[in-house]
Image (cartoon, rainbow, N blue to C red; front, side, top):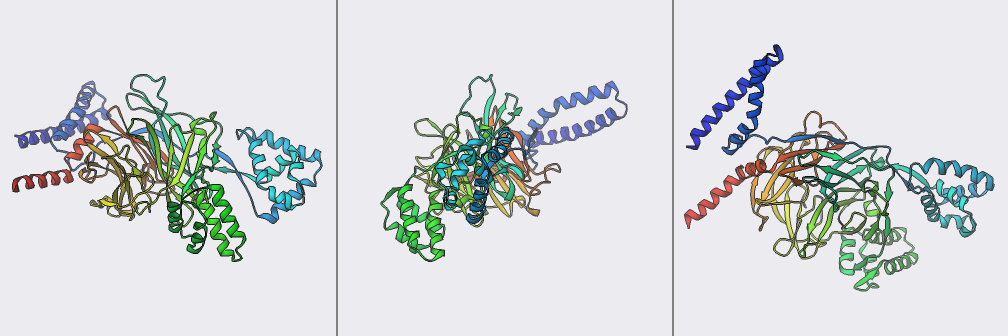
Length: 564
């Protein structure tokens, strides 16, 4: 019976496209009323026919229909932050002496126009310049001056010589992740307010995390809210209490000298704070004559910087906030944050994000935690399973444990469980490349999404010519190690308008969301800018359940039942 229906539908499909082609030809040649009516009639039947075909498996080996949204978010080179600029002690001392040789009038005449010009570009330029002046206090004292005796304008001018503007988005703006905004007030029915994180890349290929707010309506139209006029870095708070065992293990993983670690570790309690660690490390460094060994003590303090809290001013818009590299272990970038709305056992909500810290040679997986996107707690991830990129946290516990996806070997997907959010061991292989478009590697594109049919995971696959495509897989809700289905063909591939950019032929995402029955995928285009795609959830789930993977699973289950 199904075969007869399938044959009938195939005939309808062939007839549809033949008549549609004739109609289109007629429309574009003589524009007759009859042709228009016939053309519009078949257009109106198009979606019903597609759905009917999909239900009978006609399109099993064809790619799903996706909608690329007419929205693109581009890098903006005008978005700058004022960073500390330092060229060494000797030059700094000489610059300070030059400034202090100026008369009070000359100092005022120099700093006044600078403040007028740069106050239009930065929220509180005087605060920034004073802060940067304080950072060279030791050079001021080395120049034979009393820091406290300097007047306000002298400090501002000195600070200006140790400040430079950095364009955070000058090179690229990509790899977005999307979550619900904690604030869903004053919306009409069917709307949802969203927060989108992006990887912004500036001079020197340094990556940071930036944000945009967006609104999606009931018809899945997306509006990205225009950015504010300023960008603010957060205040850094070093109030962490460290676990000695975990800290020393992470230090060893970071290739810090074992002898130095043993020496410092012997003087630490099982729990300690930053001030204690700093005193012990600096004392050890001062007694050390070997310059290379001195550097090892610095590395310990750099590692301690990876545990911290940051806080943004309450008068900043989400688009004003940037999470810029703070510690030496992430000095080359904060890469590919995967945000997830996590629901705790008590029903409360916290937002987590895994990201990769990069120092130019080594990577360190880290975790962000926030409830309001103003205050963030940051810490490194530990364990055998936290050794590479591509970590993505499930949005709730599974069977009483945290669950995480990873790609510890660089080319397969893994699954891990843990009682502790920051410690990940015993990874088990979940997926390996199967199809030609993913032969080089498969990885996740953000945290799994819970649906009634299972955990939906958007994947990336790398194939010929290092082309990155997006795919999709479905896993069992109670046991995510069971793969229910995987798309045989990519869900989204780079088209001719998306393949050119900073890194050609790459589509990549760090997290999607479901809204009103449609999966919304934000994605980066060739590591340059970002856009959005949508696909109907009912069609996607149906496609996953009819995939080769799903069919093979059902056949295996039927064979087991038959044998029993």
